[in-house]
Image (tube, rainbow, N blue to C red; front, side):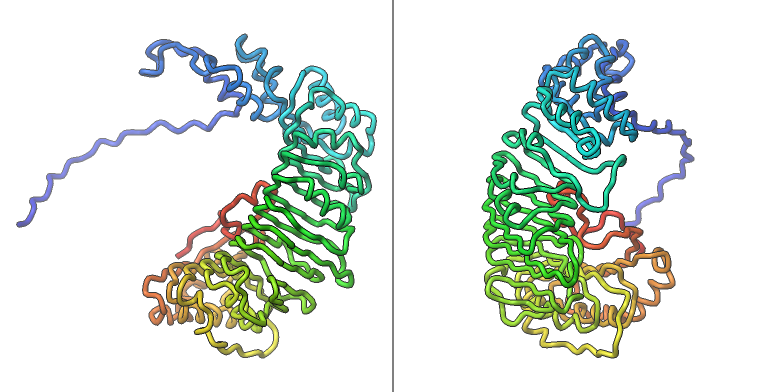
Length: 491
């Protein structure tokens, strides 16, 4: 039976009101505090100031989460709010203050003089420790900073030195018993940190810091509940040993010179789930002795002929595994930086170590020299190709012959493949329909794929950051740090 067509009805166009821009945080609080005339907003327009009816403890938490200047401004909203800033946990963040050093000094001094404490967050520049030492010591001795939970000491916008030139005074550690988050930048940490205990510290980030291996090892030992650790461009050591029964996420970038060989040893980390190398370290030797819950690993590289990765009793040299590894077989997400066609053989050897691998991210290099011809090296021995590998992502894909060869291998052999994504980067490839059409012709084997459910996508990205996408220690909580959030889907 055929259904009769519905009569054509000319719809009347109605213009929708433009959506206003979201107000600033202080304006949001102020708008909720104003009384609304009855009937002005339907059911909610009963003239009742509901947000001001919340308990002081709840309103205080809201105020403490606002930027510094907005938190102070809440005193002017209504008489109900005048005492809240003084009773709320103090939040001093240099990012919301003027860039000028003198202005920052004046504002911070006035805040500490007016607020009775306690404090939630303090973010200040080490400029004041170097040039205004007495003021810095006075700040840190203020009762307003009692029970401080978050501390950030950095170079800021008003001060910058190429290398650390200042040591932290003992007053900087007087909050060690209450700190939960700490970021320390551009300074020297000496043996004093070996005796300090951080019983509540859960996130620690050291950036451009000079510290000895023994001092760092003992500092970590003094953090019994530490969950996230980021060591970015640190130096002053030859060997770092990581041993923590609470550590879940660990990222690192070790600074040094090629003739200055260094070692990073993960001795005992029973809860470690994510191990991330932020940038290529040509001179670094990495050993993972015990990390039974490790699920995310990368970004590994074969650029340095002297580098090696040790997994338990197995040595992977130049990304070439010499035997099958069972001690760390639970890795599900792996990222690798390949720089030559020879890397494919090494990558297959590495994949044999991880039979449960689900997602593989390959950072491609735009420079592939030599006349090396890659031939498949026994793919049937790579267990994850048959049982678990569902996602393969080619980062910085440019359609070079080795790139196409790598992609073809996974198309023909990954039997559980669900998604293969080609991420192009740069103006030459970003949103280039001609480039996409050429690549689809090259990948005619899409029809001969091992997985009939596999889907193939070409995406463009203007993101200039390589793997992984980690900027601050807070980013370590990302489930998958190798996924880029600024992709433009092209096909």
